[in-house]
Image (cartoon, rainbow, N blue to C red; front, side, top):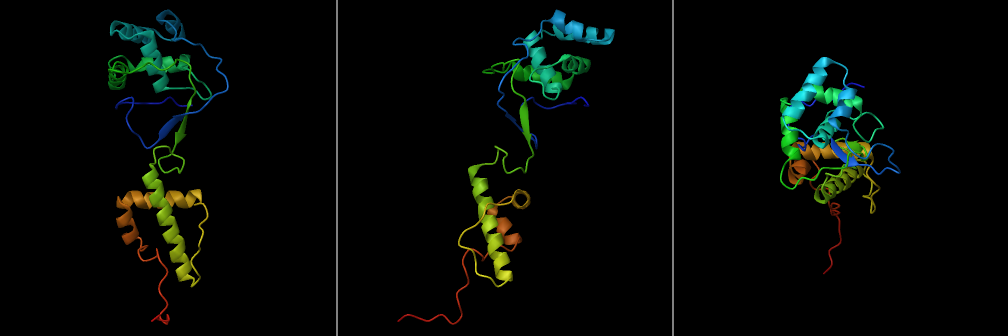
Length: 211
């Protein structure tokens, strides 16, 4: 697997992909970050060992280096940074913008260093219905769009509107989400997608008036 490259940006910056900790039944990895002597044994070249010296001179702790290595590369099915993680991270050097920004984040007031060995994170695409970043308000708007969409389709087929609506298929939810994201608001989305006017059935022309 190719190593992860993080050239810039905050350790906790928002990206289109969301990460959520997945529960794990057991952890068999080490509980503490390795010291610099152990990290040195992971390195293959003189250049890597010299770069490790740069991290030490810059005042990095073993715990901070471990967290940086994890952020740079976490091997599949692993819950802690491996030798490859350290190799990739150390190759960047202590003066790399991502290393500098990471250290700043790790030393921010109120930050608590997470466990060295912890569950890997599950990734959610930005338009995944299960993405925990979607607010209740947004989900409610998608539900409104889905109902109006069904009503419009029923009108086109000259069929009665449903009184109950099935769960939204994932592919359709993603389509609606992208439309909502494009137009920035529910009102604009309904207008530009021609969904206005489908919230209530049209009144019959020959309706009997009650005196």
